[in-house]
Image 1: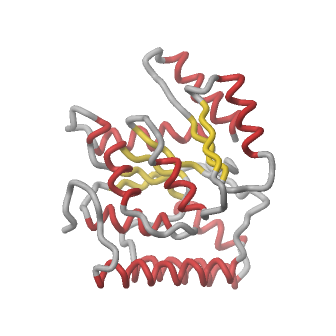
Image 2: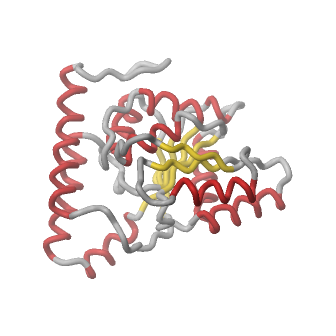
Image 3: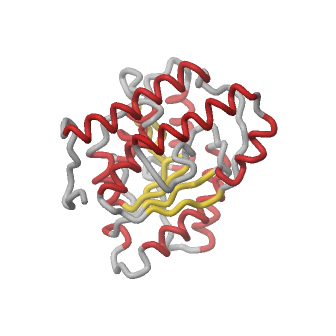
Length: 246
């Protein structure tokens, strides 16, 4: 994933000398050599381009993404799964999408917008290849997302989302969920604030080695979705930032 990502980004620099980037690799308290591998890229590309954030203990996917996003320095901030399931060149699609959403803004970093990579166009194919039980779990999760958190977004969980800098600061400073359902809370906050959201079809491939166990993960995410709805409804969780929820 890192090779593919960096080849693409270095290629963009060759095409446009004004293009700059940084990659933040978040090691979520892992016991493998993630940090060491990241440091090898720092030596080859420099510490301005590759930054390593090593967490002392595992916080969960949402917690790791939040830590990385709040320490990023770019005008546009992308978070992407480390397994490389989404081809990194698909960045151009979400970049084009977010620029369209912000076409009337003079300062892109201060605009409000989210562009979500989506696998919804692959759903028919996945239903054909998945077991009946996994298909039921998938549709059940979609229903819970619609009931408790987000409406109008067909794929909330694809790990390939691009945000403007201001949007990222607002959404991630308000984020509470640190497990798999953090995307749903992030998009729930965005919809409450009426931040423009676009969904863009991206190339996606199944990667072996997933940490998700179908039933347990479904129960955990379902519980998190209910908690998101309940705590925002009761006012126990509040949205921080410089704009007010509608």
